[in-house]
Image (cartoon, rainbow, N blue to C red; front, side):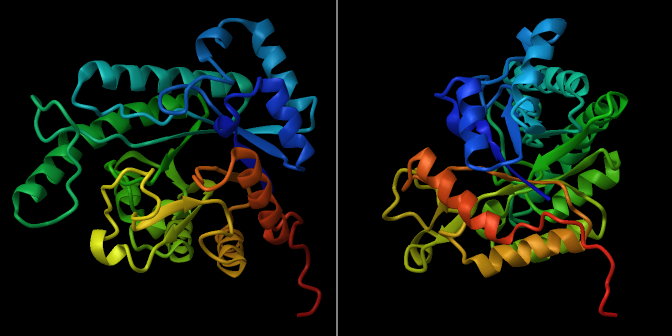
Length: 322
């Protein structure tokens, strides 16, 4: 395995400066945002596509420092009922796929998106309960009319350009659990896989180790984000796990994102790393920093130090003792 970081946390730094800093901390890989929610601070597909010199220079900036590009990320909502929002998200995704192909990057990370509840809707509707039955009707309509048709077409496009789609299972979007990921994968094909971010499993009440095993059995893990979540045992009794408070309400929220090791102990993280290897995932563990109690640099460095203790870098080799 290799240790990487999602560089959006250093969006205020110039790209070369961010790369120098990341290398100095001892990482191997970078995941780079290409638009939509992650922004284009370090990579704008419009500036690189069709410009071989800029493309070559961009790739050189990374590889000359002994780093690799593990993924391009363009999280958006291509299923948004507002057609302008959906088109922008889709266009960025399509450009990111083309850019990934030219950079020889195998994986594009994003969200599945979430539609409205009918064709005239203005806002996304995220049904997560089976009763009253209206919600089941919305769920079935969304998947039948929007989610599966869109990703069938988009998955075919990605396959034609030798790119895998790693959908981050995130609340608020149609694909948010192992079951919904596998539902889409069954309909679309193996081009669809998970970006497994344990931070979003914990706040949904899902054990990430078991999620790794469920998805790993199907070969459905395309990427892995390393981000932690701390659940407050007192506040959760008031607000529940589907806490709607702003992320800034740190004192009263049921849960908050933390850097690796500050929500769950390293034994828990070691179990996840071992489970990843057990199911055959030996690619990049990409750190994502969204810890409101730490600066980007401190959170990144503490998380990297913790992960370096448990990441499995070397091949297993022969079982010499048996």
